[in-house]
Amino acid sequence: MRLFGSRVDPARRGGDIDLLIEVGPGQDSILHEARFLDRLFTRIDEQKVDLLLMVRGAEPTPFQRVALAKAVLL
Image (cartoon, rainbow, N blue to C red; front, side, top):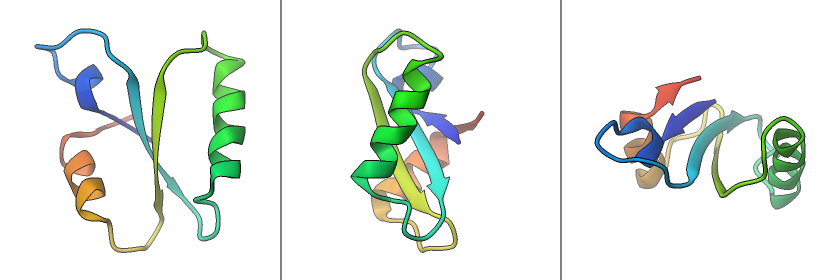
């Protein structure tokens, strides 16, 4: 799991939480996103979280490449 976007830029404050998560084939669905967010919100206060699911071993999309370039491994 990686954090990217405004939360990794020290010049910016706040904003939503952008997470890039590598998943196995067939796990990049809305159902899997919803399950992840449900589990996340049992541990932190509910807030704006954007998930970017990337299938492990697949060629990253242009947007995924941009996110990966500035992402911080959690």
